[in-house]
Each structure stands twice: as structure tokens, then as C-alpha cells.
Amino acid sequence: MSTDFWNELNDALQVLNASLTDDKIDDMESYEVIQWFSNKITDSGGNLEQFVRIAGYYNVTKAINRLKIIIEDPFEEDFVKISAQLQYATCLLTGISSVIDANPYKAVALLRNNIKLSQLLLISNTEPLLEFAINDIYARSYYLLAVCCIAGEGCEENYSAGIRYLQQAAELGLDEAKDILGEYI
Image 1 (cartoon, helix red, strand yellow):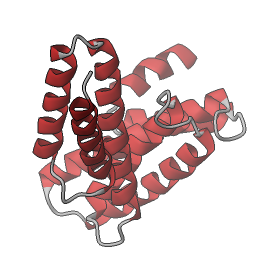
Image 2: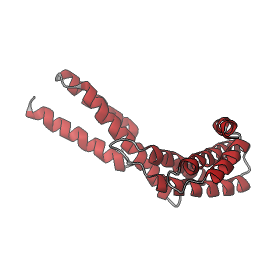
Image 3: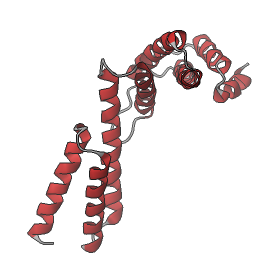
């Protein structure tokens, strides 16, 4: 492959790297660079499967970095923040190979904080549609915290607390919690 190809490839990777941390570079520009990158690899007879892994890595990393920014932004709307915390806690519980390591202790701390924020939002909210969304995040936070308590992931194993959290999630209408409660009780 020519030196020009490698120079263009390097430029494209720099734009992708910048898009991971810079909100000024929009998703469309990232998409165009990824599309260009894909075409270059295909045209050169390169390994498209490897490209898909690289592009997927960049997209997941970008999404996780945006979640972190939202969580840490003191001016972000509370509803957006609790949604981001739930998504980030889920990533921390599962760990995404080569992008983010599993950290159940941090996930449990985020979930507990999320439950408190959700409670406050439900008290102060006046919009029915937003109430439904907050309630769903609230229930899912309880559900994930219950799973952590029962399995001893990120906290001491505590079966009774786990069941209590499952009951909270079930009372908030989460079907997964109702199903699991049926198995345990």
C-alpha cells in the first residue's frame, strides 16, 4: 500500500480520536470518516472484519465517554443524568472487552445515587410522560442493584436486601423483577 494511503488513514484515525472527546465533531463527520475508512480498506483488499472491530471500538468508546461527560456535568438536566448513570452502571457491570473494564463497586455506587436522584425527580416532576420515563429508570436501577446484592457483585452478598430491591422494582412495574421474584418467593 502506498504512503498516501497510510497518511490518509492516519488523518482519518486522528479525526476519529478527536471525535471521542470533542463534542464539536458531530456524529455525521465521524460517520463520513468511518465510511471513507471502510472504502479504503475494501479497495485495498484489506481485512474488513478488522475494520468493523476498530469502528465498533471507536463508537462504543465515544458513547461511554459521552456518558461520563453527562454524569459529571453539573449543569446537565437531572433526567438526562439519571439515564446516563443507569447506562454507564450497566457498562461497568458487564465490562466491554477492550473498551471498559468491569467495575461493579463503582456501578453499585452509581445505582444507589441514581435511586436517590430518581426519588427526588419523581417528587418534583409535574409532567406525566416524564414521570413514566423516570419511573422506568428508577425501577431498572433497583433491579440492577438487587441483582448485585444477590450475587455479591460490587457489594457484600445480601439476599434479603436484594429481594427488597426486587420488590421495589416490581412495585414500580418492571416485569423482569416480577419474574425473578416469582422464582425466589
